[in-house]
Length: 323
Image (cartoon, rainbow, N blue to C red):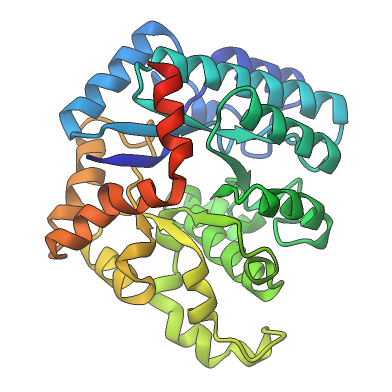
């Protein structure tokens, strides 16, 4: 069995609504024309691609097309539309899909209300958040109220880059947004959360960091050595980083082996980043795990055992509800 935790759904009606509100920081153009909508044709195409790669389940999100606006009304309207469409796609998927809820951030009370609706009425199995929300780091204290509610739910929280490349014109002017900007955001966000002691203060939240945590595995020793300049406690970042889970969107076997050695194979989850990785690239995102030189036991943990343990009954219930 294989469970893909990093897969995107981009409904045209939702993207159009975002544009009518002024668009997102990353823009909606990157999400259009990718056969990633909830139409019957797109769903069948997605299922066929999953079948070819041997993927049993995808967990859908609309990131980084997140419903984040200064206007409360716009954020709520966009979040509700995204979640309703995702729930409909799950129902169409014949037990092959589940979904992460989108939240109308930075509006905390409205986000808590939408989280409850998505869990209790729509059967979603976690929430998706961005590394930054309208320029504010996810680790900012203003989001502690949301984390408290998520902690009470023992929620799975999928963290996706916002797509702004750390607001670095050096990165964006060189068109390095995808290959470098996104993993840089993953790296900085995870360290900011550790620095703010968020995983320690809200220990029942299960955070998933995208793209193997960006540069974390490669730089972990360097980060530990220099932790005294940014850590408020003597805790080592390498130990705190093991409070997270990490998806495998990367496709470089050496990087995967490094992540296994750094975090442990029990902290890794299959991810493909579809629709940005489709067809042959989708197969690569799945197959490289088994071809990386890891043990068969570690590969099975990454493919499905860790996700099954992480989501538990929520994933099983989502499948039963959609069948």
